[in-house]
Amino acid sequence: MKAFGVTDSKIDSFVEFDKVKETPTGRDLLVKIEAISINPVDIATRKNVTGELDSPKILGYDGYGIVDAVGSDVENFKVGEKVFFAGDYTRDGSNQEYEIIDERIVAHAPKDISVEKSVAMPLVTLTASELLFEKLQINPAADNRDKTILIINGAGGVGSIATQLAYLAGLKVIATASTPEKVQWVKDLGADLVVNHHQDLIKQVRDLGVENVDYIIGLSDNDPHWNEIVELIKPFGTFATITNLRESQIGDLKSKSVNFAWEWMFTKAKFKLDSMSDQGAYLEKLAAGLDSGMIKSTVTKVFHGFNLENIKTATKLVEAGHMMGKVVIKA
Image 1: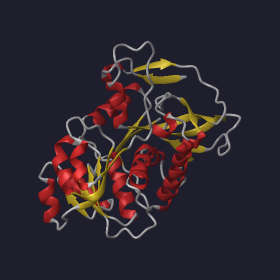
Image 2: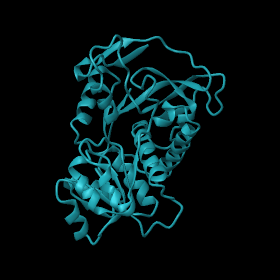
Image 3: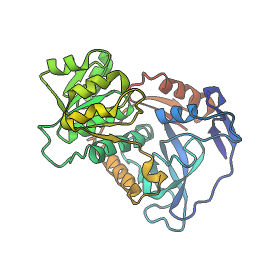
């Protein structure tokens, strides 16, 4: 079968190659891939490759397809069903014709929206859901009208769904965006207030009448905003991030007794935690939300044709760091 992988850290190392089609065992599904989405983790993973690999590494952490075969212990899926998922970092990704994936981190695909709109959403939704509901410990069923959240990089992939989920949970949402198009985008997704991350966040937030915020999510480089984060977070508030801290000092948050949390969507599957099944549950809720219109897909760019050229071009778009929403490749 056809697969795409990288052999070193450079984008030009993407190659197409033949791979043996695997047979699923245990709780694994074999899924025929119909669409994928490119994420920043694809770029970070490739850039972390050291030297020349003996065999290509298959990236791709959003997948949509049809169940082709099931392992002997599979409980929730049947051959022929359409599914979507974000994947397992310890295994080959979705940049291949057929992928092996544990059923616990898979969900039935939405029925009433397109493949493109569906495949854009798994990784970012899982990341945003774990950030909001596990790391920030926000109860979406509670009355959260007195809580305020600042989402840095609100127009990006994770920010676009985090804004929606925070709005649906009833929080006052402040999202960052830097162009008129992106400002309108995050407002349409539910942001109550918008500030420009290229300007002084402290002044902008306080000019909007907000002295401090209960929660901050860092979805881009935190270092340029670190002093703003430390100043704007409330005492006993929570700061959570998906990106590394290079120069910033967590100890700066101590005097405010601020809670700090990392989020990496792949942790549960990597360590085979019982909670990995939570990801399948999140995705089932996502499918229902997309079908009902409660959640809006954040796809903004679609390439047609599952080939080497489109994978490279889509990757370059994401790597440039200016994407609004998500980019998808449909087979």
